[in-house]
Image (cartoon, rainbow, N blue to C red; front, side, top):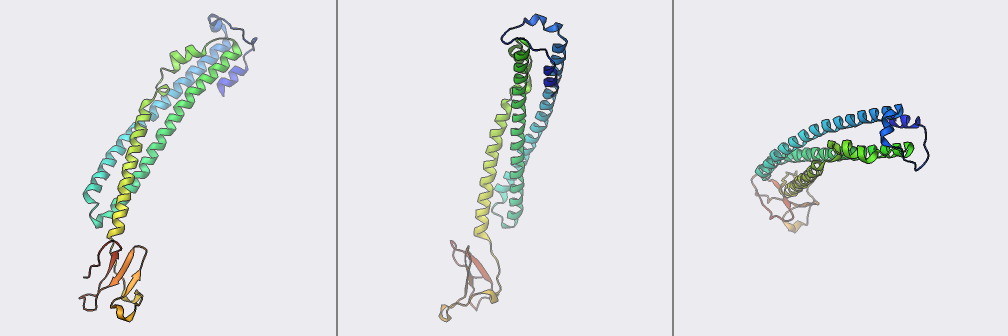
Length: 234
């Protein structure tokens, strides 16, 4: 806003008439404009560098956390008592992964928009004053700043996306394993009565069939049986 306000106070010159850049230092308006422009450039640079340091620390922390969670997954995903805790860790890590991905995208947008902003304000300046400053200022001052070139953001985005895919596969694998291994005890009173000559009672569910153990079973346990698993009596 400050830059536009200064430009608004500039005296207009005739269109398409260029003015020699040597005379730019004699103008008070030009001095104010480029002083403020340079101040804004330094402000954007400092902010970008601060965000970069913070974000790289966040990415490094996520890498350590991901390695730990994946080690737990490969060590414990066959252990039924640990599955609930492991699912919670995977879910949390997925959410942190998405936050890091969003932060990287936001920082990239911040850099791109500011780079475009400096080019536009210089273009407007040159059109209004007749001076030719855009290309030289961008090349010597803006393009050399860290926010003008940031390949590390794209590299980290690809890495975070690959990590997300790996975490998602682990979680889906865990969900599948859990659905095939859950065993529950069901009171006999809840069982639907089958035909008298069937010899057993059954209760349907969306996972499979619950089958009552024979009457001579020691504890009368009801074992949940997945549709793809054989019936096991205890």
